[in-house]
Image 1: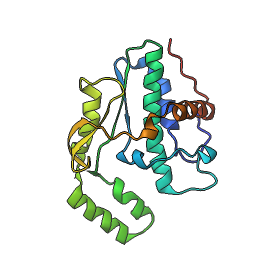
Image 2 (image 1 turned 120 degrees about the vertical axis):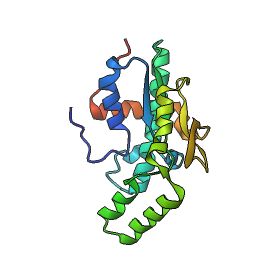
Image 3 (image 1 turned 90 degrees about the horizontal axis):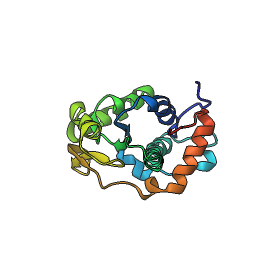
Image 4 (image 1 turned 45 degrees about the horizontal axis):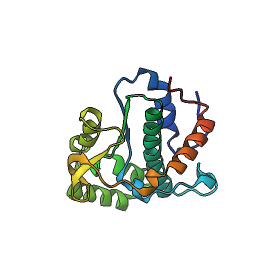
Length: 193
């Protein structure tokens, strides 16, 4: 099934993939978001950012959308009396090539050097960045939990349950609206029987 969008400042890929895999999942679903979801705003008037595109606003919105999707899926599964857990996590600041890909594509040696410097002094390694995802995937945690690193403003450190969930991520109204629009855009409808 092809998506009818040029980019994904929402969570269409997550919704589509999870919807197709849901019948096979036995224990839990873990969605990877980011601490920058705290800066996200859902722009329902231009959800796909076709009128006005800013890469950072789109990224922040996509991470907020991941959180909205996670909590809405959790609510819907609970309403259907399903025991499947749904959790979210964020890796913190992990030194991967993610930080340098944009500057390389933009041919900005200065930005690339700045990102590499940031990686060298602030970031944890990629293995440590995977800890929150692993914790969400195998830890004895309740559904609806959000995990992330526990040190240095959640940039790094051992995984823990993060208290830093944006109020906007808990909006049931926005979650239901995003769910409906996402189903229309992808053509997928969830069945919880």
